[in-house]
Amino acid sequence: MNDAVTSDLFPKRSSEFIRLPPDGRLHYDESWIKGAQADALFETLKTELDWQQRPIRMFGREILQPRLTCFYGKPGVTYRYSGKTLEAEPWCGELRDLGDRLNAELDQGFNSVLCNLYRNGEDSMGWHADNEAELGRNPVIASVSLGAVRRFRLKPRESGAARALELDHGSLLVMSGDLQHHWLHELPKARRVEGPRINLTFRRIV
Image (cartoon, rainbow, N blue to C red; front, side, top):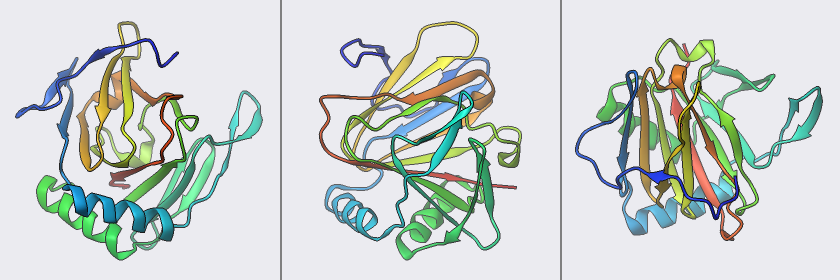
């Protein structure tokens, strides 16, 4: 999608979950991590995490993902997606602290985090759902954003208009209910964005 074309935007603040039929839910907190703390965390994670550009198989051939990734979690946790199996590296202190805070607030038993580094607006993530079997039937995904503001889009699997949300520096987006069964999401290219963004997607792998 051309980034000049707009989608309907979700409200920036909501005291309740945003409902996505049939029973999907979004909750957004635009300042879950406050300014100076978010700045420091971004710089630490950008420098210290083991960022790699991994190949994935698409349409019968291998290509490099248009972003950098790494995967951390408890010992023995593995995650398979896009034809690749990732073994969790041990939590670093900052990721463990964020996971502990999320587990205290959401009570979901998150045991891993898939990290993405979008180096600029040319890096992206295509339409997909987080519906791998090891995530359970109705997974809860907690997504922390740091760095450049990027547009996050969702669309129904069958038909219907896409909806969008601008993800702020220090924000938290929680996806839950049956959203992963009936909706797809993406982070499209944004050619006007020059700065990097880190996205931390906490999940419980069973």
